[in-house]
Length: 485
Ligand SMILES: [Zn+2]
Image (cartoon, rainbow, N blue to C red; front, side, top):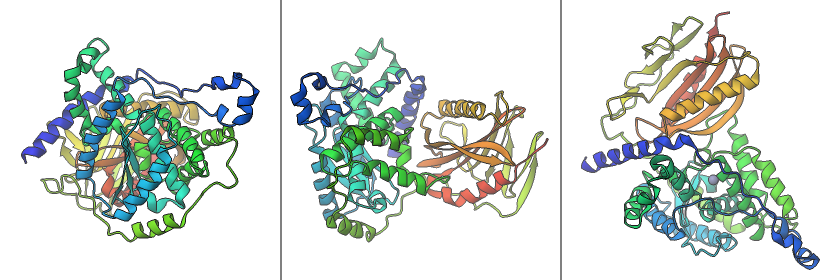
């Protein structure tokens, strides 16, 4: 009990620490420069005309040293190993290490030697992450989802690029400055205080900021990952192909976990293709698969499935009863809808919105505020524009999502901008993740429609681990919406 209390205090400090991150002071663009080599003469060009044109990427602004990356990553990795179920398969770890090391040898680290480590996590969710300093964790789900070795190598090359580009501590640097302001920055980073800071950041639970990449960072990791694949002899398109495949397979559905840690940048595939072009195209004899990969994949598929512990399950929180199949009607001034009749309705005090949640779907967030863990929130935000004007709908939706993120600093967009219709009206759909008040992560499905009274938004909320059980209910509720003309 004692340690649990301690964790939650740390978390709440962390949340408030991260709360200011929406200030977003630095939206750095991908660092693109042509090498000076172009001007050194024809001979150089002839030797390697392709590599002379590849995109040059360098780590962004960072107040941590590469050695800090290693110290920090090492602590966070030790923590992650305690919390995440291992595949317990030495052959799989050895394979990941061999493949990862081969890729890491082609990684431009600017001369820094990182102590690369590769771990297989017994988690079916399609995901992988790398902590600063080179500690790479690959979920079994990612190995299972890869069609060939090239695709797995693509995921790993992408992760390794986050390490080389030092995106984790670059994010942490920006977060620290947003919190403390430049004035006392030096004091916070002063040598002895650095230790305490590393402790805070090094904790894997608190370390969300180390894995919270911007879309620019994602695009950079794609580009460098593509170069690494190419240099290691793989088909450099494998990386984009894997992400494209994941995206296509889950279109319109709850996206794979990978995209919550690695938000899909715009034009992902086009950007990678562009880089492949600069590298001189995919080599004809590029490596795609190996017998070893196929054998490792079979071994992974046969591993016992570890059920994810549902945080909080051991405590007072018990999951609500499943949504009833009988529906009750709700009438707002401008629309009606139907909701499961075993859910309660909670009108906003100012009358502008309403929430629906099952019994025990609304929890105390630990600080005396109630937080909805399961259910639906409906609100209206001020927005003007022709309901069929997609530009107005997009910008009003972006605004609502930004507002949601302001009050929920851990909220991340995993998918957005997909069109749908709600009672015939054009709408937009987005998926986000957030820390669930029930423990673990939650999925938030946001649907927006422009109405004469403003932007009407629906936020469907459930913990990630049980989202599939609510998905149908949310769709039924949204299908039942009828606007008054
Ligand atoms: Zn990424």
